[in-house]
Length: 615
Picture 1 (cartoon, rainbow, N blue to C red):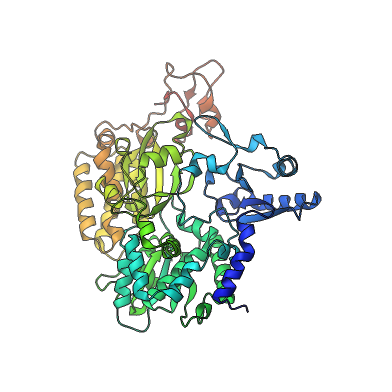
Picture 2: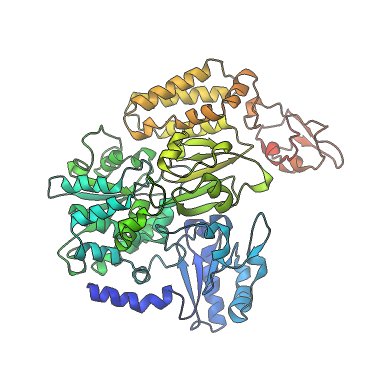
């Protein structure tokens, strides 16, 4: 077992600098996140290894499987360094050409270059692709850059420098003050000031205290924490060490949902490596401070993202929130003072300690400092993981970073903050990503899930979808959430089935108000946000469903006639090809027809028709 001192830590950094700066040879970086694994990157690595050996290039080229690169929409992807050359949607069949053309001959493989969806320009360097160029990386600083299973590469990127500074140069009070100066707020949803939370726990009496990392991440469309753990697990461990020193804690838990096997695997490797180097355990780096971390796997309950429910789960009890006060900083895990931060929050900590709190506070807005990680998904060209300064507008996120809406469709709304958030319409896209500004328009920043919806989205059905999720995930402890969300869902289902009644709108608003005011925990208190925000900005769609029995977006099957207007039909046959039940009759140069006797109302024809010919 190799126990590191500060001197040995610095020696490892120096020995590995060339490899992380890509100065000693050529490097082929393969995205090894869950998304790229699912689309074939594991096979790419095997074929690359074979091809490099075949060409006798082992001494000149090194392959590194990184964590998530972030640009999920174009995987599998590879980057070649130096030069940040970027190839997208790479298949195993492309590997010989990449080796021969790029590595040996120094020429670009044009067909694999990224093409801007608007300008159609081919872009060779990752740094010039708008998706990457408009980002500012702090929490994601090592994404797609290092091997997450190699602690030496992390150390070479100033890894554990923040922890060593906190351990040897700072008192707990100074650490807390630095975090307070930074203005960092919790990135898990509520946005509570991190430094104040730590200060409460530091001042709490007791010899036993705990540091918890919330990696439960249950929002639909959210994959920020998973990707950070897959790409840079040591950043989270280092943040926990610094947090532990600030409150004098000697034990930590990472609560990670068991559906994240790759994140858990890489976390386990990172913890074992850190222990071997003496960065976890007794007398870290030769100091007199000891701290160790354990992974606790959750079963995937959405409510266990709430801090007190998470703590009950670790204790072996049913994951249900408890009343507050007392707050966890005074009585948390096993009734001991506890601080809990999510993955993204902890990934920022070491950089704040290294660069000082005022450096971080200079980024962002007056009340929302630093950067924020978002998972872009839905009807958007550039699906993926991004990090931008707080204060960036939603329009910039969606159109410049996200590349806009595919298939020439119109933007309709963006759901921000997951099931606890709200839908923001087009006329509010200049709203900055700021905790207070987002709250004013009826949503929350939340953990960073951002789902974009185009003109074909039914906002009533979208509210129904989120309410179905929330009702299913309610822990059932308090009746406003348990019963109230069920009643909301029943009303929304009736409206989508064409059975809505005029009083339903008032009933939705009244029920939502009661749920938000009377529920026990934050999840219940925000459960009605999708209903309230869609009523606020898209009430005309509720009216159309209830009074006219029509779905303007043509997504609620019970409100559609499933007939084709022969005057609008362009005789293209797309609906005929898409129908899974052979219910569409069509011949070339003739309008299509739907046989209602065998139509299963799956909406496949509506999704492919470009001319709104189906009614």
